[in-house]
Length: 147
Image (cartoon, rainbow, N blue to C red; front, side, top):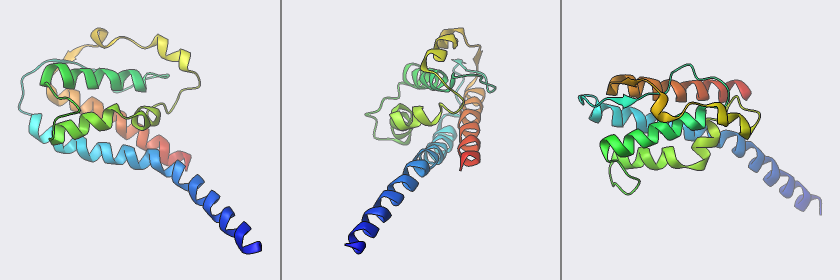
């Protein structure tokens, strides 16, 4: 009987430990995908709406939606594409990724104060990827400090 209780306790502890690790692991995975895609698209003259690198409040998920929209509309990247770009797009669309970027938010209503994607200034592809990378670096740093 004691062995069964101990095994159940071990399973519970293991699942709790992995749930705090998963968002960080996903963020690191997306950063890796982002760097691979960045190399392929860096010589593009397309102008994109770019959320600022110094996001405040609960605007991480809103900024993520803007980045996804830009990838889809300006580059034609979809989740069905069997490429590095498609893999990045799928990762950016995952709920875990979006929740992982909600790192300084107390309320879902606070996202209503975030600017719409069309309201962000336009910039080149390098600035676009710098800002997206900065968003993920901030989320990774926040997740690591929470551990």
